Length: 284
Image (cartoon, rainbow, N blue to C red):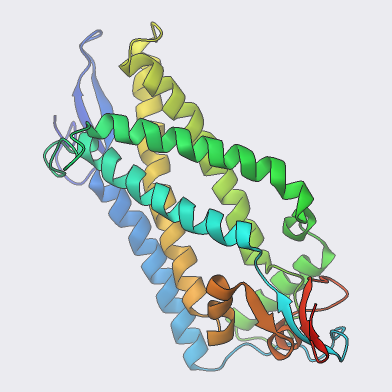
C-alpha cells in the first residue's frame, strides 16, 4: 500500500481498489494523528505562555453555599467508575485497533488468553456501547441539565476569550461544569456516533453478517480511522486541561468531593446545588 498517489506527505495511504482498479485512499496514515496531536501541543503551549503572563481573573460575585456546609459531592461514585471504566475500554480499543490498523505493531494473539485482537476489539466495543446505553438511561436521574448550555456559559466564553486576547475580563463563577467541558462533551457525542455507526458497518462486513458494498466499506474505514485519531487528540487535550486545575479539584476525581472553600472560589450556588456530604454539625 502506497502512502500517496504522488510524492510527498499525505494523510491517506493509497492502493488499487480490488473491484474497480482505481487508485484510491484506503487508510488514514500516522501523519494525520501527528497533525492532530501537534495542534493539541500548540494549543497547550499557547495556554501556558498566556498563563505565564497572568492567570485569569475570576469574579468574586456569585451565591455562596450555606455557611454550615463543609464538603459537597463533585462527582458521584457512578460517574467516577464510568470514567475509570471508559478509560480502560478506550485503551483496549486503541491497542486492539492498532493490531490490525498496522499489522505487526502489536504482537498477537493476545497473551495468556490466546484471543485474536479483532475479537478483543469487538468485545470492548460491545462493552462500550452497553456502558454508554446505561449512562444515557441514568443521566436524567443524576442531573443531566448540568451539561446543558445556558446563558452563563456564553458570558464565560466571552470573558475567557477576552482573557486569552489580553483584554480586560472577569470570568463568572461556574455551574457544575465549565463551557469547555460542555463543548468537550458534545464533541465526544459526535465522535462516538461516528465510531459506533462505522464500527457496526465494518463488523458486519468483516464477519460476513451482511453483503456490504465495498466502496461503502472503504469510506467507513476512513471515517473510523479519522474518528480514532480524533478521539486520541481530544482525550490528550482533555487530560491537559485537567492538569491545569487546582490540587483540590484534581483530588475530587478520586474522592468525589470538594470542600466549601473550593466550591466558593469556582462555583455559583444558584447555578449548581450539589449534594451536601458534610456540614459543621457532622456528615449528612
